[in-house]
Each structure stands twice: as structure tokens, then as C-alpha cells.
Length: 146
Image: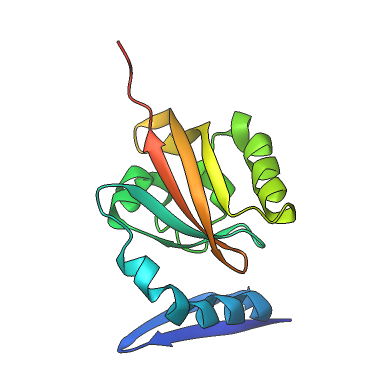
């Protein structure tokens, strides 16, 4: 079942002209109060995201992350695999599935190539399970070690 959507949070109204899966939309809006502290604490000196592993979509990203992936902004509602370079997408998707099925709570640092405003670069991606299918993720660029 799909439906056109308008989300309202405080005085902020977000209109989306496209259709959304009602179940996913309900989950995303019901998580907002639970994650308010995590959203506010997304550090602006690190590339942080909140990701819904069940549908593979980005729920929120901080300003630092939006700058890093500016070629893909807005990140919200995009599939998390869109930030991963084509050659690493299968491994990344397998990693997410493994973490979800295995009921793990931590994603150890793993190196993947990501698509940034400066092109494809290697990054260490790690994360932590928050609740349900929602994970906090961090993308740390790997600097050249010359």
C-alpha cells in the first residue's frame, strides 16, 4: 500500500510529492521521538548517518556527511548503497544483511570505497545498532599515508 505523504514535525512541514510505502513511512515517523537525542548528537566534525537497515534507506545525515556526499544530497530517503562505489556494493550489502540477520549490535570498522564530491575514495565505515532496524553509521575517510 502506498500513499502520498506530508510529514509534520513541530513547525516544520516536509512535503513529498512522490509515493511512499505506508509501513516504512509509519516506522520512520514513529522513530523520530526515540532518536531525537541521537539526531542532535550527530557530530558535525564526523560523517554520521542514521540508516534503516530493513529497507536500506538513510533516515538522517549530519551537515558534515551532507558536504562529503554533496553529489548525492539530499541523502534522506536515498538507499545507503548509493554512497558506496559500485565495486563494493555487493560486499557492503552482504555486510548489512549479515549484521541484521545475526542480531549484532556493532559494525566493526570495515574499509569500503565511497562516492564523494571529490570522487571515489576509501573510507572506514562502522556503526552501532540503536533499535529495531535503525543503525548509526560513521564514515571515516582514509587519508593517504605518504
